[in-house]
Length: 211
Length: 218
Image 1 (cartoon, each protein chain N blue to C red):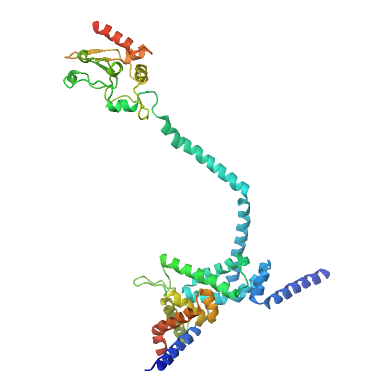
Image 2: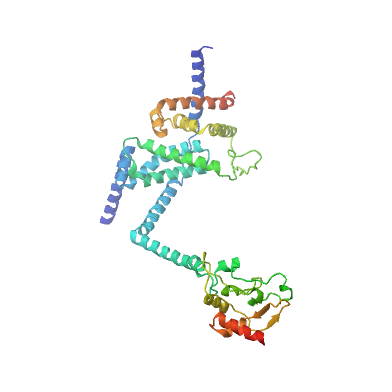
């Protein structure tokens, strides 16, 4: 009986400790992690894995590349935790790592030639290998899916320097200051690139909102 | 359309773009994301531990020393020795053989009836052409079917003395045949010195010449 009580107490402490960590800010969590508290790192992973996945996927346009980049981003954070200084926000540091890795991955993909099984990477004349979808889908879902693919295709067609900033601003909804810190540009350049990127996207997407 | 109107129109279109992008469904990490990440982090930790002992100075240096020693030994046997071994035994400088210096060849009209070039070294004696060159009158056949003569790869070698030339003849491996004198129309006598050279041991050229004379008188 006494052993059971001790065991449950330890679990309570662990749970409470975890709950306490969950209430901390990103900067406090990374500071905890720098003090070798790996639970803090796990909480940071839980917080940022989805937004990072969304950003990297919209930027690279490839699901496999996206998973590799996001995994590698967290591994870099784990490895180089002591190099983070609280001068900038933790999210800025995290997005900077992810952006650099995503750019590298895009460059590699341009060099690498491989057979694509998806709609997005199809070149003209190449055969398309598509796995038939056995689930039944309503027209609305199909239409939504096609619309998403068209938007993604338009994003992929944007120059990299515009695409990155458009996604950070209009998809991730980050501030101009944070985007400037991530991309190491001044705010004026950020705003002008957002403007130009939106103009180009608008031209490519006009068919969508005309429907 | 005025600038203000253009600006408004552009703002309106950009607003549409923003809404379209905002309306994109958010992509989420796969369900196995954290498990896969923990697995990779564990591999990182294990790799770090196993690399630890390798990066300590002593094993690293020991490995480098062994590698360096192996390379030196291999290099010695494969590169150094073959080039420095050179010709074994002839003692005849390559320069002398190639330049023909000291080699007296039969004049064009003489050699028709002479025996075909063989593997044996021959000495050409042309009484009219006998010179006082001494060692230079010792001839060797062109090396068409010449015995294997390993030549020293020395450049700028000086003329060897009589003894060293004789040594060169001695070291040539020749089939042992009885000495045979062949008289040519112009009196050039080719002799096979192989057996004489072999039996002469370390006799000088003078001794050989005197023996040659005695053979001729017969």
